[in-house]
Image 1 (cartoon, rainbow, N blue to C red):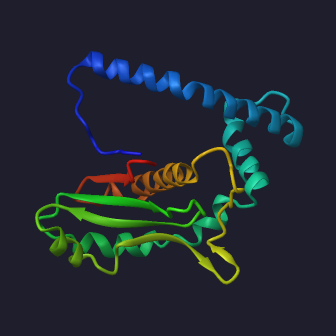
Image 2: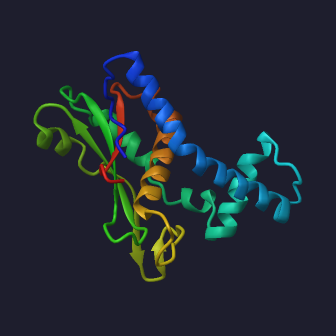
Image 3: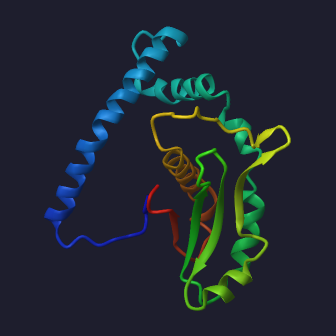
Amino acid sequence: LRLQTRMARDAKEVTTFLRDLAARAKPYAQRDLAELKAYAAAELGLAELQPWDVAYASERLRESRYAYSEDEVKQYFTEPRVLAGLFPRLPEKAREIQFGIFPDQDGEGTFSVVIGLDGPDLYVLNRAIEGHRNLFDVVHGETGLTPPVPMFGRDPGFCVQDVIADTAADWIEALWERGGRAVSPLPACIYADEDY
């Protein structure tokens, strides 16, 4: 997963890329929608899933499948403290705030989201925000994963790291819209390992 900005050479390249992306994504989106409609009909009594029901049905399906809800996970986010402490410490030479998503290599479900700065002399820039760099961690604790995020079977049929990277990117984007964009003097970038 790479979210950094890249320039296309011309409009035709952009159109070709978007059409290719749509063609590749459409079967997965159709499968997901079919599963959601079936769940909504069988479990929620919604014979016809309407656009305004999608968020509700999706959250109920997530709770049903993975035994967790977004509200449970939110309590583990440290973003108010991290972002409140980050912005006043931004060095003048910093050019960009980077949110890095680091899934574990084994696909067990643990991961970290770390904030870094881009600009000249990365060591000095990131040293200035030390103590405000860890945004979120999922770790193995005495009672399992903390916070309680979904665990996947031995062979879930997809790359767990991809799911983690995509989900964490969505969380970070929502966080940035809610509390960062309006007050940050710098642009932000979300990235994960290229293979995810």
